[in-house]
Image (cartoon, rainbow, N blue to C red):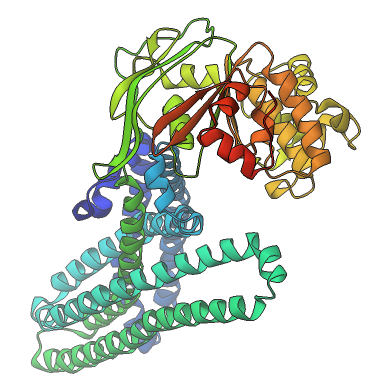
Length: 579
């Protein structure tokens, strides 16, 4: 799990533990790489006077030795970069894996608050940025910091008075970097938030283009899109402007520092406190500080942007998750499909009751229809049966066992949902029906036959291996719904939950789907939500819900004879009394 905001990147360190061997080997290579810098500075001090004196043999020896040191250093750098890149990338992968696993366990109330575009951006761009910061911290920031310490230590060894003068500029540089870093982090947070909003708008726009075109609303959408990309541009520009200002300011201080050292160094040589060879080594070492300082400045800015990304990723961790199974949760044996609701109540908040004192017994194999206005609690009842939510009061029993006492995975294998809008993942037809569950080809075909889907599947090029495009765009609504029914019955569930399974279909497609439903429902307990009441007249029991309560119950004929709410709803849909 990720940590509270104050912990930052430190709490990601445990993710590196499995890769200790690579880290140790890479660390040793890093020490060799860093240790070569003082040696190269010393060799520079030997080389410059030799060149000035015209001592070619000595120049040749120093150059040969410098090349050997460079060879060792670059080999060590290669080992450092390759050995440390793996753990850094693994941490990024582990982080993304943890977040996605967490996302799958979020409460549905929390999930509905988050836009798909924003979540996509967090799990792609934000996670990549955090991974990049981890990689640069291990592979670049750490050796740059060590290089800074080791090389400056060598400079102190050469002349501590000159080093003390050089050190006077360090606090000013550090203060400027810190100030810029804080501002960059704030600007990055605003920029990333704007990118998330842009991604959300793009997701809505792409899925809603047919609707936009149908209403000739393209100018409105274009204007909204241009407004969002302009806000995005401004947010990114503020970040880039801060970075553009920082580099020349810090660069000027670096140049001023070098010139100051040259001035003081010449005075030290004139006073006899430093010889030309030592000063040459000192200048070479000073120049070796420029690159790590530049890297540390750049990486600090990226670190601040990574902090903003990590903060957004931690937002997923702070959302409420589905209540886990109890430690003593019971396995679910063979299921008959009997359901009992005993005084069930549910509220999303104390002031927002959805179900009130709901009591109901459903016998195995019974078909029960739930009708009533929107907001009556029908879909909420389904979410309680699937244990997406738990009752605020009362209990729900499956074959005499409280749903709260069962393992969620076992419970959901015993129940199957056919939603109003068939949601499918891209892949083959066989993968869509299996949906990650082990099933033989024979079981696959049997499920398709029950769903009245085997005919059109066999006619497809590739049959069960035919590809389904994103959002099922290359299949009709009726075909997708029959695939959803096949997916539901593949595990042979005892209870089938149908949520307006044919409401979005035309008459021809509905007939094919209704045939599939009729076959799939045989021998199972079925609960069906329906607003089109003509589809539920043959149900064994019809429940009329209003404001979270059962206000009427009975068969179609019984309810029509009562001349109550159900009959009123039927007459609105031109369904007449049949008795």
